[in-house]
Length: 147
Image (cartoon, rainbow, N blue to C red; front, side, top):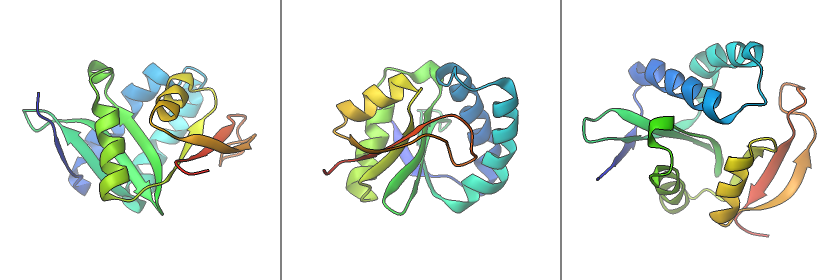
């Protein structure tokens, strides 16, 4: 299958926020329902408009994954669960490295699959922050391609 990487239009933020939620529910089992309900409107209203967004579209031009980048760092990468294991995350990360010149990513320490994925992609942990940016007990690992 051939996938298209393109920019995300602000009119598509609802689709992206919904994709975020379904992906988070599948991969972030450490988050509570209250956490998800807290983050989703912030995703839509605050985070998405502030970062450089790219998405991966299927043959029907539907968004099946997205990537957010700021200051040479992947701020978010989410793939719809129906498309896990198809190389879409790798495709987007390689695009971010080559086209957007990223060298950093932050990963929730409890998201073991994401951590394994980024290590496989060549990232190494250089710092651990015990609380996330909201003061919640979800440690963040700062990772880089270079060390």
